[in-house]
Image (tube, rainbow over all chains, first blue to last red; front, side, top):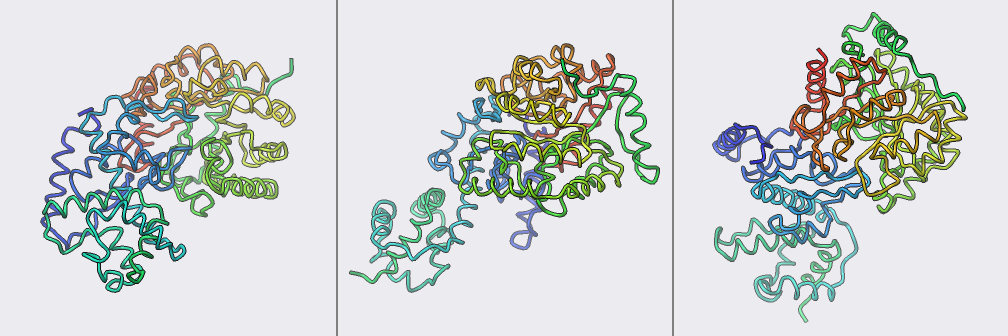
Length: 227
Length: 315
């Protein structure tokens, strides 16, 4: 460890989550602190510790919104979209950006584990934020042809409009359909199967990358009567 | 050579510091701190990272409450805490100028600045004074998006706030434009540095400061000792050389080589050495705390910790 966390912090974190787990669904929502809302898992909470103790939140926002001082908007940054397990985030964080008007500091002492935890937390925040943003989108009706193109390029490897998704547009109305497309994580498919795990990972990545129009277009395509 | 603004001698400075708590009013229940062993202490309101947004009516009362809770009586206040616009909408960060809607925001901010009555600022000054607090510097980041009329109004605003002058994150090219304004308004602008060593227009090195200091006696320095160290410069040497032109320092602790902000005493910034130099040489340089390292605790708690550190090294 680079020394970001005090020596006993890990013990405290484990204890906090053990208590939270005992309380299960009845547990009250964790109280926010100066670094935002505690993350839902110990792994993500480790990432939050790196994010906050490195003071990333002062410029990039506690939830990736409200970037200040000319900082990059991580919610929409293509670099974050392309990042996998910190492979792009890590080099930038370690080197900093000394050429910026208000330079981004460098963090050369962060360990590989801390970079991985930080990246996981940034992706988590981004998915949360993009979900909020895209579920509130009230754009036009979408272009079914553009949706078909997008679907074939990004969804067709796992899904088919006439197969597993047949009738989905009739089953879910409006916002519910949009929410299912954006985050189908409560699918009744058997948990832990490779297909489900991979699917959730893929949907997580897509959630970070969708343009608002992509979602509208895919919905228009799914709603379109079969040709 | 034109005369510059009045800079207090060390004896006068000591008298001001001694009198300040009295000026705060005997009615104040909490004793506010203006100095430690004759070293002037204040804070930069940027330290409060958990404030209501710009323009929120709770913002000024929150700053006042925070300062009183910490017990520090003097501040340098950011324009983003005075104006109903975040600092990003008034053009300092070049990256922010590219954001969608920036031009409209900038025009709105300009219209507001040119039309707001001066009693808007006087009312804020009154709120601070009623709480026993003093705004010593108005922190405005002058930049090329300002019109001349806007620059004039900003000087009037600083006077209405009761500020002695400005601290400004600005650039050398803007300093050149400001020369006739500081001389007409007879008010100083203290340049604040960051640590961008690539852009020669930025304040980051001793030479960049010296370029501006040579332009007008009304130009001073707000030396951010943490950023200075992050740019691998020596704040002790700078203060020894330019103590007569240094209005205040921003006290923060950063690591060298563009390293991160750290809790006081954990970075590479010689905070103790700088504070003791100012104390021992009786330089009339105010030391303003600036909290920017990461923490889960509130800004108020962390500024208190920063203040405790300064108390220890100045004891």
